[in-house]
Image (cartoon, rainbow, N blue to C red; front, side, top):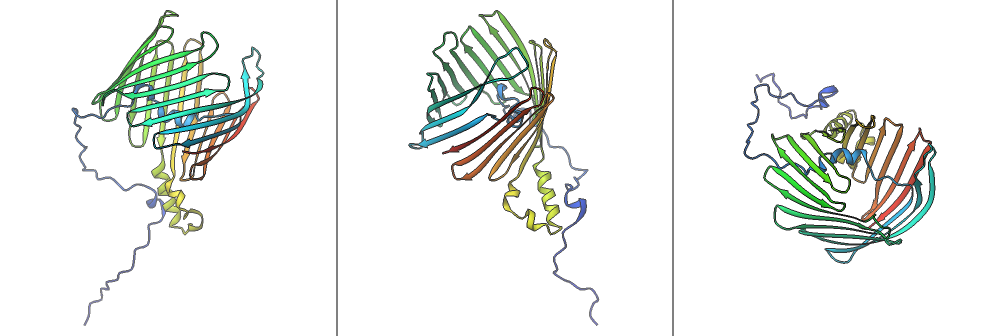
Length: 347
């Protein structure tokens, strides 16, 4: 007589319901990882402490037509041409927005090397923008930003000396109009970094000091900044990519392959961002909420702020080295509407 137990190799059916979306239960007895306080990670530069929020909430918006062409001559040197046709807003004491049609052409040259970067832009009206980044040593970097114009007292220049330590960064700044500044940021834990900055503007006889904190993990970034000038800035970015992927897997279990089987959905990266800014001197309060979707062939960013301004920016990759850009911004309070489209050719 044989046994009544049957051994089969039939594949198990995928779990349906919330079990396919929710993450697996963590082991309650798992001990927390020990922190090596002598080998903390190096923090981000002080000036980039809110870079994730800026990427989502401050896309490069424009109005009109823009065309950018970049031609690489070799692996390090390239030339660029940019044409813009749109409108420029003029300052006005009334609530109405005054726009003047404008157009300009810009020629650029770029030299990119692992230890040296030279970027220059010349506009048709004679304005010159230049950037230099040079690694003097493995830890010390020199940055130069310059803007030269034909109008007197409008040219600007800035020298930055950045030093990168094992678990800290520091920067010293020298600029025109007798500007001097310095900042320092230090990692105090694997996820938390604290920093401070000071500046002195000799021509206006003004000085200030500020403090900042940044807490980041694999799924979120939170920052806070406060300065003696009366500015309080908060930002929060939540990465929800993993949740979206789990949701797509959950939908696949219900045979939704016709809609979600395209490979580009599996390269989806989603971030939600919000910020809050308070100016104690002017009593102005502004908050905004934004999103950032990154697919294989396109990137979509948008925001909505407390002033009633809605903005969105779409970057679509049509082919290798060819990108199509759409930009839109609506200000309901000022009844100001902006729309732009552009094409970028070259990498």
